[in-house]
Length: 379
Image 1 (spheres, rainbow, N blue to C red):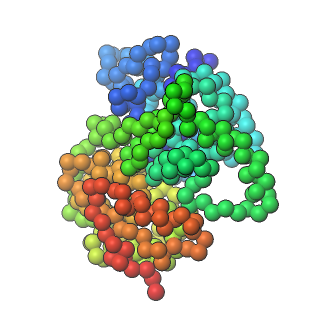
Image 2 (image 1 turned 180 degrees about the vertical axis):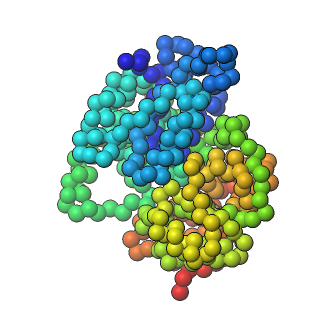
Image 3 (image 1 turned 90 degrees about the vertical axis):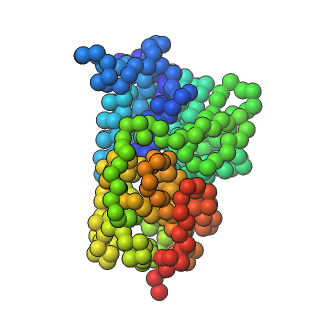
């Protein structure tokens, strides 16, 4: 059995794993992993036959969809190249899988001095937090959800994803009631008292402000810029897809019409699909617009930095309108954001959806704003 990790990270998406690598690369990142062994250079930078000591033990808790799993495996390979240890722990796919994973991880969780998490809203991560004894808890971005996490912890609210709509009937309410003690413990872990022994850090590219005893460090994607690019630029425009249809926030017909209009107005030729976009939706979109649909094998920040990439990248409100300006600084690429018209929202969209999406666009710096009228809704 390997020795317990001093720095232990839990990730459930490719972007979370990318941001763990960014955190490890930035000043003030992890402590050495094993028994005081100092970090060593990435694999291939030392002498012949040498391999670096692991710096972080990264536990991947993969989702079930194939696109996410594929990207996670490629990100895991990059993490290993940086000298980190990566463990693949299945925690889904069966009723007993979460309990088996929890039992397998319990010893490491209790022993870790620093714990890094990528999704504070994850129920599995919150369950793991009940075992945490670490003095230092770090939250790295899982995208724009970090903005909602900061706002909810500042107000002392229950941690609920912005697009989630309550319900589920009596069974759902019973599950919420049974889970309430775990959720309450997670909130306490994320909101330490002033002068206490525990430290909570947020490492983020999002425009957020720390509160209470929480500290904030900016993620400027320095590792991404150091390892990749600069990219070769094409003459065309690239569009960035979103999973707002899949999460039930935006009407499918309105979304298709918006993409069609953006393609025509901006001369777009490629569409970078979100890893959770449905294949049938993408086939319909390609047939209606003529766009080349690209399924990235890595997070878009890395794909864009490697290139080739369009001189203009157009996105709906999402994480990339905050991260791509960092990743592509100095390259001459223009990032633009197209607002979401309230008329595009579905009747089942969360009441918070309109304000949250507007806030994502309003707070993005270094991007060009495109009004929703530039991509009118269907009908």
